[in-house]
Image (cartoon, rainbow, N blue to C red; front, side, top):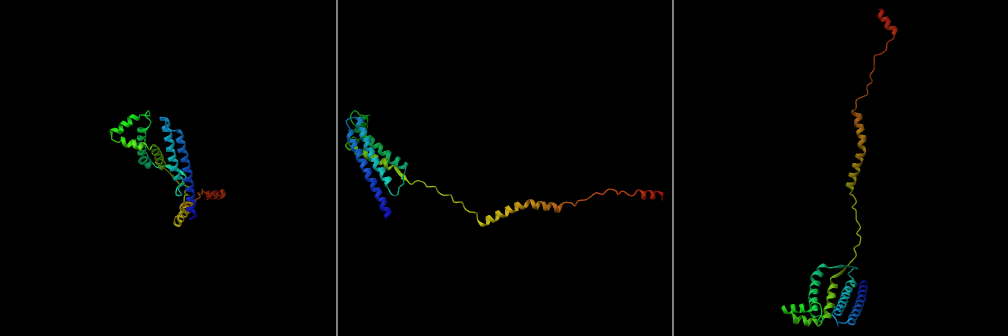
Length: 209
């Protein structure tokens, strides 16, 4: 229980810091204002950043999470991109009159019959920007760092060890066995003896006889 209490405390502190940071960013957005198109998009970008900070803090502060950020491709493609298209469409159609292609997006909205819905939601463009930042933050997740896995080398079995010892002993005795076989099959040494030298006196006596 102490472990869970420690994680809960950490998550609580992380949430508090994220809420404070998001509040500071929202205040900064109010200082930028929305008088011009540039200020409009700058303030909404800051508001979206506040939502992103809040969402990422929940991932980092979770006790089941790690510290290495990763992008969830499925969440990004199926969750964030559709939200980006819808929110971007609404903001483009409800930006200041001299904004980028505002008339074109308003005309397209009228053609498909959603102009009234776009104008109604456009009154909450700050909320839309904040929510878009949260969805982007939910596309990020943290995973534990991959620890090095020790490699376990299987020790050879007793039978394999005995077989290896027998093989090594046979390989070591093979030259000696070959020498013994050669000694057994070799022919005996023979000495060639030439004719004997007889005594000359005996040779003369035999001639006289």
